[in-house]
Length: 397
Ligand SMILES: *Cc1c(COP(=O)(O)O)cnc(C)c1O
Image (cartoon, rainbow, N blue to C red; front, side, top):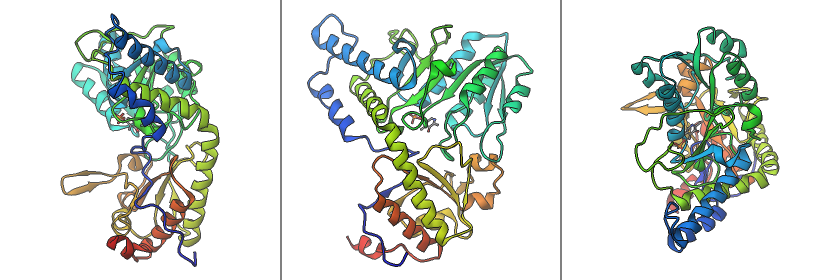
């Protein structure tokens, strides 16, 4: 690019797989439920309680509509971490002794991997399946793991680092055939790809509000009713949410989650096309300047808003240091002083060296073409060892 691109709002946020901006329309919908209509949705003996309860139930219907569920199949939680814990530990503890095997995939979110691993201490047998180099689970690898009677299979719909989309209906069918329950973490899928939990025939699914422009600290767990899936709850208490999740429902957050679902349903199809064109624009610009860049994960089965890129020369840490006003992710978890290479990239077969030169870029609802052009120019300059265009002005601003 010859002339520098127009200066976007700084910083430029391209980390929409970590979290998203809460949509201002969602915030506006929530606000009165903090200050005006603040009744406890469980206080159904007075009008302040019943109006909150009615709004919570409307939100439940909005979530259900987006994911292909009956509203009665949804339990509100604090987010996908909690939903994954309740689903995996709750199903294992309720089922007890007959089937001990729990099958998951090496590229799952930490909260799934750790929930499955924790169950080893209770006598269950965790199995972590590998993925193909494109990040997808081979159905034959799952079939083989189900040779041993299996209690639960858990496979995420969309991966949070590489954005690949698994064929959940097919994997759930294989699991059911073997008599196993099937759970899927849909935190990165909601609002990005069409979801139909009842058609996919999954038993359990986990939702997070802040991954699709809703508030942080709220989510949902889908629990199939026909046939009914039984869980042992994690919390003791007042027995809210059909006994599965005790605790006062955070009505403002739940109402925000419902509005986020309504907006996603109305705008998802058009939004997907816009995100795909921004993604292609970024990749085209980068490839023109850095031909040896590699896209990790399947290029066909992936959400439009994610790029996971291995650069040929510069490390991700150096790129980010040279462009401090660009919010992207290394996909690496920092532990003490060392940077651990991403276990997801390792599972794809990347060397530690390749992983160290890899960035995750998440394009979202509030990303503009100017943001993309800035990111392309800044990363190109940074890869050549130069600071980003306009960085001095920014530092002084
Ligand atoms: C963000 C995320 C989670 C955790 O969700 P919280 O609501 O932040 O607890 C779990 N799984 C995946 C795939 C995620 O992207």
